[in-house]
Image (cartoon, rainbow, N blue to C red; front, side):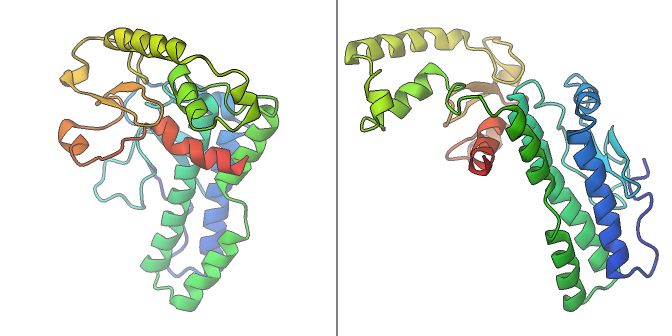
Amino acid sequence: MEAAVGAPSNHPSVQEVFLDFKGRRAAIVKALTIDYEDFFQQCDPGKDDLCLYGFPNEVWQVDLPAEEVPAEIPEPVLGINFARDGMKERDWVCFVAAHSDTWLIAVAMFFGARFGFDKADRDNLFNMINDLPTVFEAVVGKVKKQGKKKSPVSNHNNKSKSNFKKGSESQENYSKTMESKEDEEEEEEEEEEEQGETPCGTCGENDAGGVDGFWICCDICERWFHGKCVKITRSKAAYIKHYKCPSCSIKKLVNCSF
């Protein structure tokens, strides 16, 4: 795949690199807004690691990563398709948007380093880029309009809602609906009994041993995931004090923008 099609010439100016950035950004915004239905369908979780590429001619493409190592330019985040059906759709598209912003900056600064931009050039390039809304801002603006009537707490599971109410007794809306202590204890007991049959939060399977026998629990939403489904190995998990699943990782960022 020619990820650098339309890249700046051998001796580019700051303006040329900015135009490259602007074209790639426009392509990704188009994929996540105007062409979203097509983009969503192409991100099949059953396929291998997929990336969202944006090209300077404002064309986007969902494809496998480049085979060359190192690649001609920095590669977008891998595996955006794996989380498609394991997250709320709004959270997923905003998650992809945030990673796309990171990739666009990486490509622009890569060209700056490759072509010897000095501090003044880099400052100029960054200021030009910063004058444009980020991909995330563009996507959140569209999602916000579409989901304006949705309650910000309507998607919490019973346990997280219970924990939220315990820490918010002074809030009138929740204090009116507080359940008795006995009811809460019964709910917790029922949840513990069902834990053995809890499906993976990403793939939905509830095989007892999990994929490769390893499961990990999100400390925020308390859902369980196969390690393979969220790209976490047993050895890596040993260094994680508080694990956040992909959905919870982006949730705070999304909510702060709404």
